[in-house]
Length: 387
Ligand SMILES: Cc1cc2nc3c(=O)[nH]c(=O)nc-3n(C[C@H](O)[C@H](O)[C@H](O)COP(=O)(O)O)c2cc1C
Ligand SMILES: O=C(O)C(=O)c1ccccc1
Image 1 (cartoon, protein in one colour):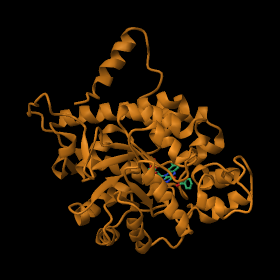
Image 2 (tube, helix red, strand yellow):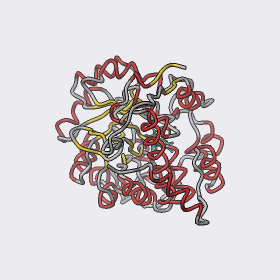
Image 3 (tube, rainbow, N blue to C red):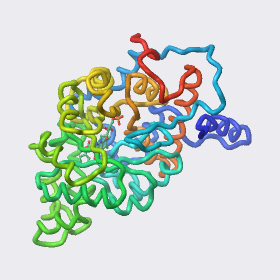
């Protein structure tokens, strides 16, 4: 069993030897440091959400409406207490994955390679965005486990090429994002006129793709602004026609588990179960798509109730601590994707910052589970009450 809780001992021991922590342990302070470290455009891009940002606020507030219910009188055996989970028949050392985050070159020069360096040793796999800053084959070399997130492009052959490349490069699952047919209305980006794609950022998987390249008259310029390749990317990055038919077709291209990310309703989850999708990520994209939509955590119980026996239900949006991970798992999530917290770690301290955030979450999760008298993989509805 990996003892993630030892991170707590290490921090105190180091501090006692004069080595004070370099990074904070709470999300808000880390976010403030990231704001100081980043240019205003990229910071607004990461922190910003849709409209008046009510969904993003609701995501975080939803966690405070649940209360964990400890059992204090349960002795624990020594071999219990690990954080491992089984997903699609594979063992994972922890129930965390890094959420797909596009255009990471805005946050750190080494983008996904720095994330890999921080997350891989901790046992947290990456869900690699289609809009990554590093081609997927290069990221695959740097990590043990990774999943591939697909933005369904208007061009079916391009979709097939992405899925086949990811499968060949060793991804363990394909996550199709369904909530981003286009980008939401994002006032922070609008106010700064900030759209990184116009500068060719987040295009590495496209510009390296043979199908994408075959559609162009001239080779893409890696740092071009407003080029033919950029406009072709903008036209093909997300397709308004994404449907269950398209999702069902992915089956023919890969034997990997297929998940759909951005599900908030039981009826849609049931439709996906019926076409043989293996899992869903209950998510509202961190509130970046629709203002004033349902908090992701509030949608989790209905989705788990409808399809939890048939499909693997994962969760993201608004997770800000290890205790939040415990609540999402008690409500039925089998694993949790973390978004903005590690992005801020990356901004402030590169790979070490990512590692710090993930280790902090996992230590708090393990300590919380121990104090609840539970194993993380066994958390269930009995472990939470509405406040
Ligand atoms: C800067 C940024 C970029 C994102 N890029 C993607 C992406 O490329 N693909 C995707 O499916 N989701 C993307 N998301 C959504 C995340 O995967 C995740 O759903 C969201 O960050 C969860 O919310 P939280 O960060 O507030 O916890 C992005 C989110 C942020 C903040
Ligand atoms: O900004 C986002 O939320 C996002 O999902 C995205 C979409 C396209 C490219 C990069 C990120």
